[in-house]
Amino acid sequence: MSRSPGGRRPADPLKAAEAAFKKVTTKPIEGPAKAPSIPGVKESVTLRIDQDVLEYFQQDGPGWQDRINAALRKAAGK
Image (cartoon, rainbow, N blue to C red; front, side, top):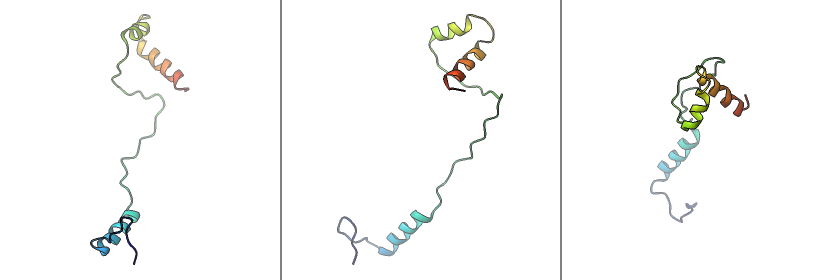
């Protein structure tokens, strides 16, 4: 007779065996497949940054979002 680690038998050995079998044979539910990144396509996001950092990138006028993107790209090693 095999006993569980706590020294007690399962209340219903058949249910315990079925549960163990289901646990190792059931394929985990996967989320939706991640779409591949398309070069040059930009995504709109909300980003909270310090006011002085924003002012630094905006001081040269239009294109400040592109400058922030370029700085983030460089920091990411891309």
